[in-house]
Image (tube, rainbow, N blue to C red; front, top):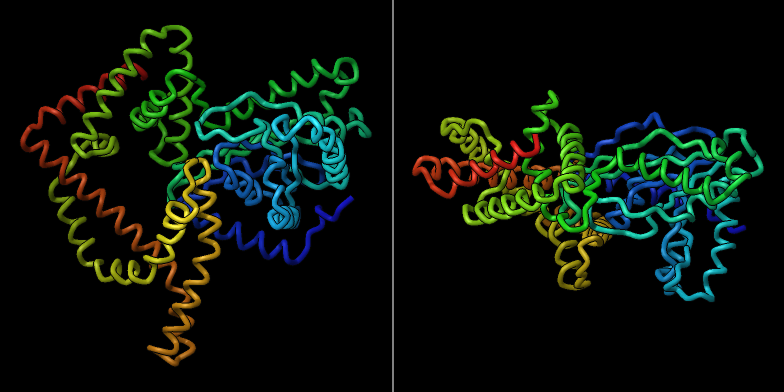
Length: 448
Protein backbone atom coordinates (compact mmCIF):
# COMPACT_ATOMS: atom_id res chain seq x y z
CA UNK A 1 0.00 0.00 0.00
CA UNK A 2 1.16 3.57 -0.69
CA UNK A 3 2.03 5.98 2.08
CA UNK A 4 -1.03 8.15 1.38
CA UNK A 5 -2.18 7.85 5.00
CA UNK A 6 1.15 9.02 6.44
CA UNK A 7 1.02 12.36 8.23
CA UNK A 8 4.18 14.10 6.98
CA UNK A 9 5.48 17.45 8.18
CA UNK A 10 5.01 18.96 4.72
CA UNK A 11 1.39 17.82 4.57
CA UNK A 12 0.81 19.11 8.11
CA UNK A 13 2.13 22.56 7.23
CA UNK A 14 0.09 22.78 4.03
CA UNK A 15 -3.08 21.50 5.72
CA UNK A 16 -2.75 23.94 8.62
CA UNK A 17 -2.20 26.88 6.26
CA UNK A 18 -5.12 25.89 4.01
CA UNK A 19 -7.51 25.41 6.96
CA UNK A 20 -6.33 28.69 8.54
CA UNK A 21 -7.02 30.50 5.25
CA UNK A 22 -10.31 28.66 4.73
CA UNK A 23 -11.70 29.90 8.05
CA UNK A 24 -10.89 33.46 7.00
CA UNK A 25 -12.45 33.12 3.58
CA UNK A 26 -15.83 33.25 5.32
CA UNK A 27 -17.25 36.05 7.44
CA UNK A 28 -18.68 33.47 9.85
CA UNK A 29 -17.19 30.01 10.26
CA UNK A 30 -19.71 28.02 12.31
CA UNK A 31 -19.39 24.39 13.44
CA UNK A 32 -22.34 22.59 15.03
CA UNK A 33 -22.16 19.16 16.64
CA UNK A 34 -18.38 18.91 16.92
CA UNK A 35 -18.81 16.47 19.83
CA UNK A 36 -20.33 13.97 17.37
CA UNK A 37 -16.94 13.27 15.80
CA UNK A 38 -15.77 9.85 17.12
CA UNK A 39 -12.28 9.41 18.52
CA UNK A 40 -9.84 6.49 18.19
CA UNK A 41 -11.83 4.60 15.56
CA UNK A 42 -12.12 4.49 11.76
CA UNK A 43 -14.37 7.24 10.42
CA UNK A 44 -15.93 7.96 7.05
CA UNK A 45 -16.97 11.62 6.77
CA UNK A 46 -19.96 11.89 4.42
CA UNK A 47 -20.76 15.52 3.50
CA UNK A 48 -23.29 16.86 1.01
CA UNK A 49 -21.49 18.07 -2.11
CA UNK A 50 -22.37 21.44 -3.67
CA UNK A 51 -19.15 23.46 -3.64
CA UNK A 52 -16.28 21.44 -5.15
CA UNK A 53 -13.01 21.67 -3.20
CA UNK A 54 -14.53 23.80 -0.45
CA UNK A 55 -16.60 20.84 0.77
CA UNK A 56 -13.46 18.73 1.23
CA UNK A 57 -11.61 21.54 3.03
CA UNK A 58 -14.63 22.01 5.31
CA UNK A 59 -14.23 18.38 6.40
CA UNK A 60 -10.46 18.82 6.90
CA UNK A 61 -11.21 21.84 9.09
CA UNK A 62 -13.24 19.73 11.56
CA UNK A 63 -11.13 16.54 11.49
CA UNK A 64 -9.06 15.71 14.58
CA UNK A 65 -5.51 17.06 14.56
CA UNK A 66 -2.93 14.72 13.00
CA UNK A 67 -5.65 12.56 11.46
CA UNK A 68 -5.44 13.08 7.68
CA UNK A 69 -8.70 12.67 5.79
CA UNK A 70 -8.18 10.74 2.56
CA UNK A 71 -10.75 11.69 -0.06
CA UNK A 72 -12.03 10.01 -3.18
CA UNK A 73 -12.42 12.19 -6.28
CA UNK A 74 -13.37 11.58 -9.87
CA UNK A 75 -10.59 9.83 -11.79
CA UNK A 76 -10.39 12.13 -14.82
CA UNK A 77 -8.69 14.89 -12.80
CA UNK A 78 -5.72 12.50 -12.36
CA UNK A 79 -5.03 12.36 -16.12
CA UNK A 80 -2.43 15.12 -15.91
CA UNK A 81 0.74 13.69 -14.30
CA UNK A 82 1.62 16.91 -12.46
CA UNK A 83 -1.94 17.24 -11.16
CA UNK A 84 -1.85 13.58 -10.10
CA UNK A 85 1.25 14.23 -7.96
CA UNK A 86 -0.43 17.18 -6.27
CA UNK A 87 -3.56 15.12 -5.65
CA UNK A 88 -1.49 12.28 -4.20
CA UNK A 89 0.24 14.75 -1.87
CA UNK A 90 -3.10 16.17 -0.75
CA UNK A 91 -4.29 12.60 -0.03
CA UNK A 92 -6.87 12.17 -2.74
CA UNK A 93 -7.53 8.83 -4.45
CA UNK A 94 -9.22 8.36 -7.84
CA UNK A 95 -12.69 6.84 -8.16
CA UNK A 96 -13.62 5.58 -11.62
CA UNK A 97 -17.08 6.00 -13.12
CA UNK A 98 -18.86 4.66 -16.17
CA UNK A 99 -17.87 7.75 -18.15
CA UNK A 100 -14.19 6.91 -17.51
CA UNK A 101 -14.63 3.73 -19.58
CA UNK A 102 -15.79 0.22 -18.73
CA UNK A 103 -12.19 -0.98 -18.88
CA UNK A 104 -11.29 1.29 -15.94
CA UNK A 105 -14.10 0.29 -13.57
CA UNK A 106 -12.09 -2.71 -12.39
CA UNK A 107 -9.46 -0.34 -10.98
CA UNK A 108 -11.96 0.66 -8.30
CA UNK A 109 -11.39 -2.70 -6.61
CA UNK A 110 -7.78 -1.73 -5.86
CA UNK A 111 -8.84 1.74 -4.69
CA UNK A 112 -11.54 0.29 -2.43
CA UNK A 113 -9.00 -2.13 -0.94
CA UNK A 114 -6.79 0.86 -0.15
CA UNK A 115 -9.74 2.59 1.51
CA UNK A 116 -10.46 -0.50 3.62
CA UNK A 117 -6.83 -0.66 4.72
CA UNK A 118 -6.92 3.03 5.65
CA UNK A 119 -9.95 2.40 7.85
CA UNK A 120 -8.29 -0.67 9.37
CA UNK A 121 -5.51 1.66 10.52
CA UNK A 122 -8.06 3.79 12.42
CA UNK A 123 -7.71 6.60 9.88
CA UNK A 124 -10.38 8.73 8.21
CA UNK A 125 -11.92 8.78 4.76
CA UNK A 126 -13.92 11.53 3.13
CA UNK A 127 -16.47 10.30 0.61
CA UNK A 128 -19.14 12.41 -1.07
CA UNK A 129 -22.10 9.99 -0.87
CA UNK A 130 -23.95 11.75 -3.70
CA UNK A 131 -21.15 10.69 -6.03
CA UNK A 132 -20.92 14.00 -7.87
CA UNK A 133 -21.36 17.70 -7.33
CA UNK A 134 -24.48 19.77 -7.85
CA UNK A 135 -24.68 23.49 -7.22
CA UNK A 136 -28.33 23.45 -6.17
CA UNK A 137 -29.08 23.29 -2.46
CA UNK A 138 -30.65 19.86 -2.49
CA UNK A 139 -29.60 16.28 -1.90
CA UNK A 140 -29.19 13.95 -4.84
CA UNK A 141 -29.55 10.15 -4.69
CA UNK A 142 -26.74 8.51 -2.70
CA UNK A 143 -24.46 6.05 -4.50
CA UNK A 144 -23.43 2.69 -3.06
CA UNK A 145 -19.63 3.02 -3.03
CA UNK A 146 -19.41 4.52 0.46
CA UNK A 147 -21.43 1.63 1.93
CA UNK A 148 -19.45 -1.01 0.06
CA UNK A 149 -16.26 0.34 1.64
CA UNK A 150 -17.85 0.68 5.08
CA UNK A 151 -19.13 -2.91 5.14
CA UNK A 152 -15.85 -4.32 3.82
CA UNK A 153 -13.87 -2.53 6.56
CA UNK A 154 -16.33 -3.60 9.25
CA UNK A 155 -16.41 -7.30 8.27
CA UNK A 156 -13.48 -8.45 10.37
CA UNK A 157 -15.13 -6.87 13.44
CA UNK A 158 -18.57 -8.25 12.54
CA UNK A 159 -21.13 -6.88 15.05
CA UNK A 160 -18.54 -5.28 17.34
CA UNK A 161 -18.61 -1.45 17.03
CA UNK A 162 -15.81 -0.12 14.83
CA UNK A 163 -16.39 1.74 11.51
CA UNK A 164 -18.58 4.82 11.73
CA UNK A 165 -20.09 7.02 9.05
CA UNK A 166 -20.37 10.65 10.11
CA UNK A 167 -22.97 12.68 8.13
CA UNK A 168 -21.94 16.29 7.57
CA UNK A 169 -24.31 18.97 6.31
CA UNK A 170 -22.63 22.05 4.83
CA UNK A 171 -24.49 25.31 4.24
CA UNK A 172 -22.92 28.27 2.42
CA UNK A 173 -24.09 31.88 2.49
CA UNK A 174 -22.97 31.99 -1.14
CA UNK A 175 -21.45 29.46 -3.53
CA UNK A 176 -19.62 32.18 -5.45
CA UNK A 177 -18.80 35.10 -3.15
CA UNK A 178 -16.10 35.64 -0.54
CA UNK A 179 -16.98 36.89 2.94
CA UNK A 180 -20.29 35.06 3.51
CA UNK A 181 -21.03 32.38 6.11
CA UNK A 182 -20.39 28.65 6.26
CA UNK A 183 -22.20 26.29 8.64
CA UNK A 184 -20.71 22.82 9.12
CA UNK A 185 -23.40 20.71 10.77
CA UNK A 186 -22.04 17.40 12.10
CA UNK A 187 -24.55 14.66 12.75
CA UNK A 188 -24.42 11.70 15.10
CA UNK A 189 -22.23 8.87 13.76
CA UNK A 190 -23.88 5.89 12.09
CA UNK A 191 -22.54 2.66 13.60
CA UNK A 192 -21.96 0.28 10.67
CA UNK A 193 -21.89 -2.75 13.01
CA UNK A 194 -25.62 -2.31 13.62
CA UNK A 195 -26.25 -3.34 10.01
CA UNK A 196 -23.81 -6.28 9.82
CA UNK A 197 -26.27 -8.99 10.86
CA UNK A 198 -28.76 -8.03 8.16
CA UNK A 199 -25.88 -7.50 5.72
CA UNK A 200 -24.84 -11.12 6.15
CA UNK A 201 -28.39 -12.22 5.34
CA UNK A 202 -29.16 -9.79 2.51
CA UNK A 203 -26.47 -7.26 1.42
CA UNK A 204 -28.83 -5.39 -0.91
CA UNK A 205 -31.51 -4.82 1.74
CA UNK A 206 -28.95 -3.82 4.37
CA UNK A 207 -27.23 -1.40 1.96
CA UNK A 208 -30.57 0.23 1.17
CA UNK A 209 -31.34 0.57 4.88
CA UNK A 210 -28.09 2.30 5.76
CA UNK A 211 -28.37 4.45 2.65
CA UNK A 212 -31.84 5.61 3.73
CA UNK A 213 -30.47 6.38 7.21
CA UNK A 214 -27.60 8.48 5.85
CA UNK A 215 -29.91 10.26 3.42
CA UNK A 216 -32.36 11.06 6.23
CA UNK A 217 -29.55 12.38 8.45
CA UNK A 218 -28.11 14.57 5.69
CA UNK A 219 -31.59 15.95 5.01
CA UNK A 220 -31.80 17.06 8.68
CA UNK A 221 -28.32 18.59 8.63
CA UNK A 222 -28.48 20.56 5.37
CA UNK A 223 -30.87 22.74 3.40
CA UNK A 224 -32.68 20.38 1.05
CA UNK A 225 -34.80 22.21 -1.52
CA UNK A 226 -36.14 18.93 -2.86
CA UNK A 227 -37.91 20.02 -6.02
CA UNK A 228 -37.25 19.70 -9.73
CA UNK A 229 -39.72 22.18 -11.18
CA UNK A 230 -39.71 25.00 -8.61
CA UNK A 231 -36.12 25.23 -7.42
CA UNK A 232 -35.73 28.98 -8.06
CA UNK A 233 -39.04 29.59 -6.33
CA UNK A 234 -38.04 27.54 -3.27
CA UNK A 235 -34.63 29.20 -3.02
CA UNK A 236 -36.07 32.69 -3.26
CA UNK A 237 -38.94 32.09 -0.81
CA UNK A 238 -36.67 30.61 1.88
CA UNK A 239 -34.77 33.91 1.79
CA UNK A 240 -37.93 36.03 1.79
CA UNK A 241 -39.58 34.28 4.72
CA UNK A 242 -36.63 33.28 6.94
CA UNK A 243 -36.73 36.33 9.25
CA UNK A 244 -40.47 35.88 9.85
CA UNK A 245 -39.95 32.16 10.52
CA UNK A 246 -37.17 32.97 13.02
CA UNK A 247 -39.62 35.19 14.87
CA UNK A 248 -42.34 32.53 14.79
CA UNK A 249 -39.94 29.88 16.17
CA UNK A 250 -38.95 32.25 18.98
CA UNK A 251 -35.27 32.14 18.06
CA UNK A 252 -32.72 34.95 18.34
CA UNK A 253 -31.89 36.51 14.98
CA UNK A 254 -28.59 34.86 14.01
CA UNK A 255 -27.06 33.01 11.08
CA UNK A 256 -27.79 29.63 12.69
CA UNK A 257 -31.39 30.62 13.48
CA UNK A 258 -31.96 31.69 9.89
CA UNK A 259 -30.53 28.39 8.68
CA UNK A 260 -32.98 26.50 10.93
CA UNK A 261 -35.78 28.73 9.68
CA UNK A 262 -34.90 28.04 6.03
CA UNK A 263 -34.95 24.31 6.76
CA UNK A 264 -38.47 24.62 8.19
CA UNK A 265 -39.61 26.68 5.19
CA UNK A 266 -38.11 24.11 2.79
CA UNK A 267 -40.05 21.31 4.51
CA UNK A 268 -43.28 23.30 4.18
CA UNK A 269 -42.64 24.01 0.49
CA UNK A 270 -41.83 20.38 -0.30
CA UNK A 271 -44.98 19.28 1.49
CA UNK A 272 -47.08 21.87 -0.34
CA UNK A 273 -45.74 20.82 -3.73
CA UNK A 274 -46.82 17.24 -3.03
CA UNK A 275 -50.22 17.97 -1.51
CA UNK A 276 -51.31 21.26 -3.15
CA UNK A 277 -49.21 21.96 -6.26
CA UNK A 278 -51.57 24.72 -7.36
CA UNK A 279 -50.54 26.75 -4.28
CA UNK A 280 -46.89 26.45 -5.29
CA UNK A 281 -47.80 27.66 -8.78
CA UNK A 282 -49.41 30.77 -7.25
CA UNK A 283 -46.48 31.26 -4.88
CA UNK A 284 -44.10 31.11 -7.81
CA UNK A 285 -46.02 33.85 -9.62
CA UNK A 286 -45.98 36.03 -6.49
CA UNK A 287 -42.27 35.37 -5.95
CA UNK A 288 -41.46 36.28 -9.54
CA UNK A 289 -43.45 39.53 -9.33
CA UNK A 290 -41.75 40.38 -6.01
CA UNK A 291 -38.26 39.78 -7.42
CA UNK A 292 -39.03 41.95 -10.46
CA UNK A 293 -40.23 44.77 -8.22
CA UNK A 294 -37.08 44.59 -6.06
CA UNK A 295 -34.94 44.79 -9.20
CA UNK A 296 -36.92 47.80 -10.38
CA UNK A 297 -36.55 49.50 -7.00
CA UNK A 298 -32.87 48.51 -6.72
CA UNK A 299 -33.52 47.02 -3.29
CA UNK A 300 -32.87 43.69 -1.58
CA UNK A 301 -35.33 41.71 0.51
CA UNK A 302 -33.40 42.40 3.74
CA UNK A 303 -34.31 46.11 3.50
CA UNK A 304 -38.02 45.30 3.59
CA UNK A 305 -37.41 43.12 6.65
CA UNK A 306 -36.54 46.23 8.65
CA UNK A 307 -39.44 47.01 10.95
CA UNK A 308 -38.36 50.62 11.51
CA UNK A 309 -36.17 52.72 9.26
CA UNK A 310 -35.19 55.91 11.09
CA UNK A 311 -33.51 58.87 9.45
CA UNK A 312 -31.68 59.72 12.70
CA UNK A 313 -30.20 56.22 12.92
CA UNK A 314 -29.07 56.38 9.30
CA UNK A 315 -27.48 59.80 9.85
CA UNK A 316 -25.57 58.46 12.84
CA UNK A 317 -24.36 55.45 10.83
CA UNK A 318 -23.36 57.76 8.00
CA UNK A 319 -21.36 59.95 10.41
CA UNK A 320 -19.49 56.93 11.79
CA UNK A 321 -18.70 55.70 8.28
CA UNK A 322 -17.50 59.16 7.25
CA UNK A 323 -15.21 59.40 10.29
CA UNK A 324 -13.75 55.97 9.51
CA UNK A 325 -13.23 56.79 5.82
CA UNK A 326 -9.41 57.15 6.20
CA UNK A 327 -9.23 53.60 7.61
CA UNK A 328 -11.23 52.36 4.65
CA UNK A 329 -8.99 54.14 2.16
CA UNK A 330 -5.86 52.71 3.78
CA UNK A 331 -7.27 49.19 3.84
CA UNK A 332 -8.58 49.52 0.28
CA UNK A 333 -5.28 50.76 -1.16
CA UNK A 334 -3.27 48.09 0.66
CA UNK A 335 -5.60 45.25 -0.34
CA UNK A 336 -7.27 46.07 -3.64
CA UNK A 337 -4.90 43.85 -5.65
CA UNK A 338 -4.89 40.71 -3.42
CA UNK A 339 -8.65 40.87 -2.85
CA UNK A 340 -9.51 41.35 -6.53
CA UNK A 341 -6.78 39.25 -8.18
CA UNK A 342 -8.42 35.83 -7.51
CA UNK A 343 -11.72 37.00 -9.03
CA UNK A 344 -9.95 38.59 -12.02
CA UNK A 345 -7.82 35.50 -12.70
CA UNK A 346 -10.77 33.14 -12.35
CA UNK A 347 -12.98 35.28 -14.58
CA UNK A 348 -10.63 36.52 -17.29
CA UNK A 349 -7.62 34.20 -17.27
CA UNK A 350 -9.10 30.81 -16.38
CA UNK A 351 -12.53 31.78 -17.79
CA UNK A 352 -14.39 29.34 -15.56
CA UNK A 353 -18.09 29.13 -16.43
CA UNK A 354 -19.35 26.69 -13.81
CA UNK A 355 -20.45 28.56 -10.68
CA UNK A 356 -19.88 25.48 -8.53
CA UNK A 357 -16.12 25.96 -9.04
CA UNK A 358 -15.96 29.73 -8.46
CA UNK A 359 -15.20 29.68 -4.73
CA UNK A 360 -12.72 26.82 -5.03
CA UNK A 361 -10.74 28.50 -7.81
CA UNK A 362 -10.75 31.88 -6.07
CA UNK A 363 -9.68 30.31 -2.79
CA UNK A 364 -6.78 28.34 -4.33
CA UNK A 365 -5.61 31.39 -6.27
CA UNK A 366 -5.94 33.54 -3.15
CA UNK A 367 -3.85 31.33 -0.84
CA UNK A 368 -1.02 31.80 -3.35
CA UNK A 369 -1.44 35.46 -4.34
CA UNK A 370 -2.25 36.91 -0.89
CA UNK A 371 1.06 36.00 0.81
CA UNK A 372 3.10 36.81 -2.33
CA UNK A 373 1.56 40.26 -2.60
CA UNK A 374 1.86 41.03 1.12
CA UNK A 375 5.52 39.97 1.17
CA UNK A 376 6.29 42.08 -1.92
CA UNK A 377 4.45 45.07 -0.46
CA UNK A 378 6.28 44.64 2.86
CA UNK A 379 9.68 44.53 1.14
CA UNK A 380 8.86 47.73 -0.74
CA UNK A 381 7.72 49.35 2.51
CA UNK A 382 11.01 48.44 4.18
CA UNK A 383 13.27 49.75 1.44
CA UNK A 384 11.26 52.75 0.26
CA UNK A 385 9.54 54.03 3.41
CA UNK A 386 11.05 52.68 6.61
CA UNK A 387 14.22 50.81 7.48
CA UNK A 388 12.79 49.86 10.85
CA UNK A 389 12.24 46.13 11.27
CA UNK A 390 9.63 46.73 13.97
CA UNK A 391 7.57 49.06 11.77
CA UNK A 392 7.94 46.66 8.87
CA UNK A 393 6.67 43.74 10.96
CA UNK A 394 3.71 45.82 12.13
CA UNK A 395 3.00 46.77 8.51
CA UNK A 396 3.08 43.10 7.47
CA UNK A 397 0.72 42.05 10.25
CA UNK A 398 -1.92 44.78 9.76
CA UNK A 399 -2.34 44.50 5.98
CA UNK A 400 -4.97 41.73 5.94
CA UNK A 401 -6.99 42.92 9.00
CA UNK A 402 -7.25 46.36 7.40
CA UNK A 403 -8.42 44.69 4.20
CA UNK A 404 -11.23 42.93 6.07
CA UNK A 405 -12.05 46.22 7.79
CA UNK A 406 -12.27 47.96 4.40
CA UNK A 407 -14.55 45.23 3.06
CA UNK A 408 -16.81 45.53 6.11
CA UNK A 409 -16.90 49.32 5.69
CA UNK A 410 -17.88 48.94 2.03
CA UNK A 411 -20.69 46.48 2.85
CA UNK A 412 -22.05 48.73 5.61
CA UNK A 413 -21.97 51.70 3.24
CA UNK A 414 -23.87 49.75 0.59
CA UNK A 415 -26.49 48.79 3.16
CA UNK A 416 -26.79 52.35 4.42
CA UNK A 417 -27.38 53.60 0.87
CA UNK A 418 -30.07 50.94 0.39
CA UNK A 419 -31.83 52.02 3.59
CA UNK A 420 -31.71 55.65 2.50
CA UNK A 421 -33.21 54.72 -0.88
CA UNK A 422 -35.97 52.83 0.91
CA UNK A 423 -36.67 55.79 3.19
CA UNK A 424 -36.96 58.09 0.19
CA UNK A 425 -39.36 55.67 -1.50
CA UNK A 426 -41.44 55.53 1.68
CA UNK A 427 -41.46 59.30 1.87
CA UNK A 428 -42.85 59.68 -1.65
CA UNK A 429 -45.20 56.72 -1.07
CA UNK A 430 -43.86 54.75 -4.02
CA UNK A 431 -46.60 52.51 -5.43
CA UNK A 432 -44.00 49.89 -6.43
CA UNK A 433 -42.61 49.75 -2.90
CA UNK A 434 -46.09 49.49 -1.39
CA UNK A 435 -46.93 46.67 -3.80
CA UNK A 436 -43.66 44.88 -2.99
CA UNK A 437 -44.43 45.09 0.74
CA UNK A 438 -47.94 43.71 0.16
CA UNK A 439 -46.65 40.80 -1.95
CA UNK A 440 -43.98 39.97 0.63
CA UNK A 441 -46.66 39.90 3.34
CA UNK A 442 -48.80 37.60 1.17
CA UNK A 443 -45.91 35.18 0.66
CA UNK A 444 -45.18 35.08 4.39
CA UNK A 445 -48.85 34.43 5.24
CA UNK A 446 -48.96 31.49 2.82
CA UNK A 447 -45.96 29.85 4.49
CA UNK A 448 -46.29 30.70 8.18
